[in-house]
Length: 364
Image (cartoon, rainbow, N blue to C red):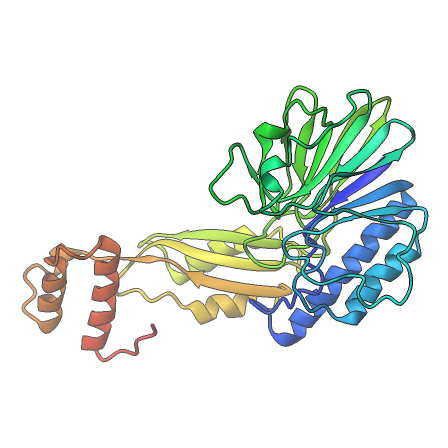
């Protein structure tokens, strides 16, 4: 029996934190299309169940058209059961616009008790929605048959202990030795798979599509293949576009051509349809201005989206100004002697101050 584990789809997210309105609209629709493609993949590969481990949607008010796309995908594939467990972002009532009963292939969970569904006589999928009220007794109330293949669905932040705030916290230690073969989690947006105990494993599937540069790298879902009472899991990369963050380390000996060349080397293998962020780090001389517009011109038309962040620090050669009797030298010595400033702040203040003294344009 094959099962897909997915979570954190965040469908209908506005996608406007980085993108302009036009590209944000494109990405918004691509998230929905990736969900449809995943369902088609499941049908083609004879997947029996798709587990949605929370945060299917992104906000309380979801467009009717987005809800309809998800509902149509479910209804058009009655051979697949959809396990829908709400996460902390699933504030919208997915079924509120329906004027009929739920499709027979939708399985839902509640916060009141553990709910289980059995397949092929020996495979059981159990889930429960976490709240502040039930989190304390969550593991104690979970009872599983050791002779079955037990898959458990939860949405929350992993933890090896009970913190002060019980909201969305999953105590992994409390779930050990509970006869779990695969713990299908949602909430963390990157794929992660580790042992839970001697018997089972736990995994975050990550999101289907990255939405911002805090969600870089391959995104997709987990495919479970259960045979002879054994669970094999495999991460399937599936996103239409990948987000990349590359760091170019600058040093005072580098020219603009060197910086651009280094950036070229970093991104040369990245597909043109992806989203790219280059971060400039390291040190530069006070008198050297990095030509950011040049870097942007070089790369912004090469990818679906390009972003540049300058985090370089100024290296000040204090000896050069030690005996300089000009206003610039006096200013540098004044800032150098200020012990309340960090080295980073000192360099930044000197850079801006010298530019002001020289009558140059200051870009803050």
